[in-house]
Figure 1 (spheres, rainbow, N blue to C red):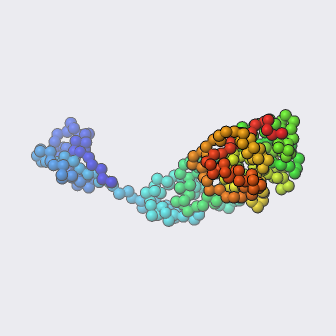
Figure 2 (cartoon, rainbow, N blue to C red):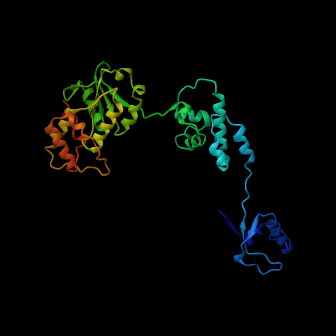
Length: 328
């Protein structure tokens, strides 16, 4: 992009000089090719005359030394193809590339212990969020290095749960919303052993869609008793498209290692209680209505039809319709 500049601006530092010196300064810039006259601007009316405006001519940077560095100085793990075609980008990203190069050299012949993304990011660049929130992933892409090469893992929010008992096998119940989690925990703390006549050993707070991220690291972030294959995991959430969709995605995520089933007695209790309410709340906007039929197959035809009718009427039943007085 061309930069336009006035004669007055060019002479700003030599205002106290006489015109002969000013003229010599401008002609010197012209002779060096650093400016070009904008002839349409007209002349200043003095003798010898100068144009009123000029184009600044950008100096072409010499990328020769950088190209030599790319060719001979970086570890072979770093692909230099992109930077050779875009040396100006390498000039900007060079400090970060050299830090990556130093780290790769240091770890060339040693086993790489797996670390979290933020830990690895700080180890390489001295910035813990460089990969997650800054330009780390872009630089890796420019270097042709897959993220997996760094032997790192992404962490999720810790899974919140209440262990009523650690005996196995047991029933684990995932709850979409925190109010229901707190109420059911209170129910168990008061000496109850069952929820809707099903013994519950552990309650897990799902935090809406957050459970999908947490369950990716389920085996790493829970106590060993929870991973026992003999346990049965249940899910209970809002009776709406989003709540059903969370169960579907979670079920698909865990198969074939674990089977996560809808907590049917709770859904049936929601449905029964809703029948005594005149008007149900309207379905929240922007919900993904693309759900499968799998969820409904766990219920009788009569219950399934009632559920589908509620959804088709653009209404829903929140999990919070049930409270501590309903769980026994």
